[in-house]
Image 1 (spheres, rainbow, N blue to C red):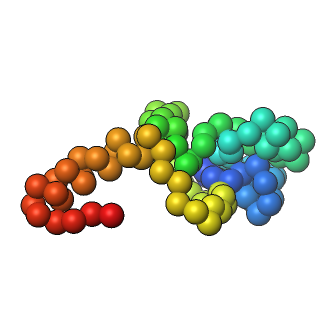
Image 2 (tube, rainbow, N blue to C red):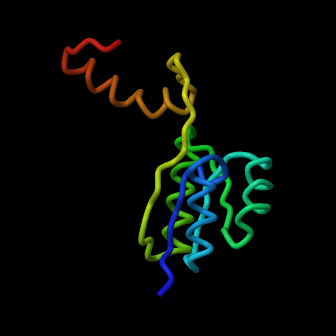
Length: 115
């Protein structure tokens, strides 16, 4: 029986190798990546894998991905977290600030200092 396997970072490195491996075994693979180039690489090396574009550094895109996956795949048998994007400096986007603002405001209301 085929399993449904979601692989973040499924268009590069070990994630792509796993996508190829599991599709060759007959499993249904959903490879998550953030670029057209990654999609092209995946199509060349694991043509049976299903590609979904999402930038997991974006809260909105991550939430959209979760909604899409839960709608399209009511059962996910395995989740492989192979995405790797390192940033030595903290990056705070408007999206993150808006998400954190209520937490900061609540903390300040209770007399706690935040960074």
